[in-house]
Amino acid sequence: MFTIKAEKISYKYDDAIEPIINEISLDIGQNDKIALIGPNGKGKTTLIKLILKQLHPTSGTIHYPKQQINIAYMEQNFVLDEEVSVQEACRSTEIEQMERELVLLEKQLEHDTSPCLIERYGLLQTQFIEADGYHYAKKCEKILAGLGIDASMINRKLKSLSGGEKTRVQLAKLLVNEPDLLILDEPTNHLDYEMILWLENYVKNYPKGLLFVSHDRSFIDNVANKVIVLERKGYTILKSNYSEYLKTKEEEFNDQMKKYNERQDKISQLKEAAAARRKWASSFQRETGKEGKSYTFEMVTNPAKQMMRQAKSLEGRIRVMQESDPIEKPWIEKKRKISFMEDSRISETVFTLKDICKSFNGKIIFNSLNLLVSKQEKIHLKGLNGSGKSTLLKMLLGEILPDSGEILYGSHVKTVYFDQELGNLDQKSTIIDFLLQFNNDHTFVRTMMACLKIEREQVYRVIGTMSTGEQVKVSLASLLVQNANVLLLDEPTNHLDIEARIALENALQEYPGTIIFVSHDRTFIKNLATRVIDLNNR
Image (tube, rainbow, N blue to C red; front, top):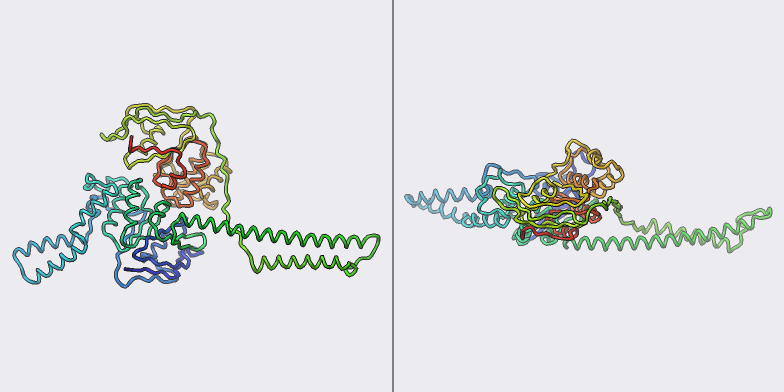
């Protein structure tokens, strides 16, 4: 058993005014499955680097166990040796060395049975068994298979693999060695639905510690037994799942807003009562001053004086309520209404696919695919990697032609495509200049940027200087401002934090056109899709 304990740790970068990590205290134990979440730029990666000792706290202390523990970390932008095979990439160097030495010792023992040699062999064999060396290869194959890397790929060079396949190899490399603490940064990116389920089950039952960054709400709910939320101010540690946290947060917000409104109503009532009493006293004063009568306050009758005293008393109560027992108004994010332009000219049937066939290098992707897509549908394309999801989107876009069959387009169809590789972005352009190419309505463009959590102060930033998550939001904004009536989206939630995913969901729910999308975010699919098409069965 082990525990890593952080006590009020803070970290401030040299060029920053405020610390990005501010007095965070937490425990990481062997049985913990901790999700680390929060908006991009709030310190998740910094906190991981502090735990890994890649950075040292500006203040506070991190206590590590006396015994040595093995920590493995998969960052988003990892680097692999492209020239090695999948099998070689997953091998444990330590186990390989022990295996080679055991073979060498066995050959020596054929001719030399000296006690020291026998002792050395026995000790090394014990270490090999403890490291599960005899089952290592099988365990590696099992994990690779679970992640969709089958026997036919085991000897392929990494340079021949896709980005998603490399991610799976890196995951397998870490999982097979079973470190004491496994740290994963966005592990579900580039994994299809079945692989996410496999990984979810694997890490949920992982017998050692797990710390992971994720924006996949279903994955968080199903795996984490503790959630650390890095917020605008400070942090929150949850012992419930994230969905329960959101529910509790909403209840707390509603309760706080109710108390605030009740207090404001009470203050308003007191102000009205005080004003009414002052008005009555002032009216009496004017009456006594008519017809050239000289007026002094002392001439006011006792009832008028009483009203003034009551007014001052009520005003005093208001000051006490505001100063000694204030109730802060909960922060409310400004909701921006999106006014998409609906194209009433588009036909009821958007796409009709008849007997579509498509193959790549002899592999059949589609065999007599028939599909009808109607106006305003929001369709989720489901399927394993290689089932043709991206291919189908590019065929609808017209970038890939079917080998046979026919694609019929409805009238006035205007299609735009989100490329998960972000190939549409001009890296040298500022955000605002890039978006105004597609729509010169400054108000609408800025509204759409705000809806997708692109902050006002970012509009003049050069796209090439931004993080991948920020660039994803710019690319999505460029689609939504174009007044297209069909959106083709390939993994639009990759690299987006939870806040941005919810914002995208809200924008797409309001979108009046047709949406066909690929995603492995189960919550996003549930909240958006009106129909699911499973390409595994076609």
